[in-house]
Amino acid sequence: MTPHKHSTHPQIIARLKRAHGHLAKVIAMLDDQEPCPDIAQQLFAVEKAITNAKRTMIHDHVDHCLASGDADSVDAFKTITKYL
Image (cartoon, rainbow, N blue to C red):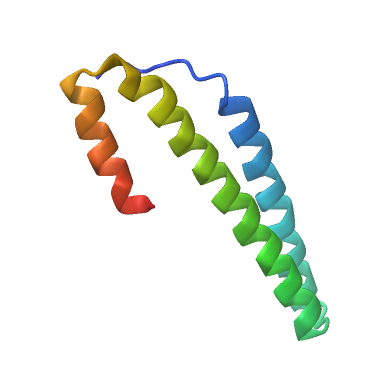
């Protein structure tokens, strides 16, 4: 399967960098023994950023890769569905 250029990759990278920042904050908060509700809020932010990155990537795959209709794209979609 030939790699595709995706216009959404910069958006996905930005979301993952945001998640990375939130995760670093969670670790610092745990080290500093900050209140559990505050830590939970940061963990929620990590999950949300990752979920949004995954959703963007899957939507991009559906929009662009499956449009070609080739067998490799369909097989790749079948594989990706296990991560939904």
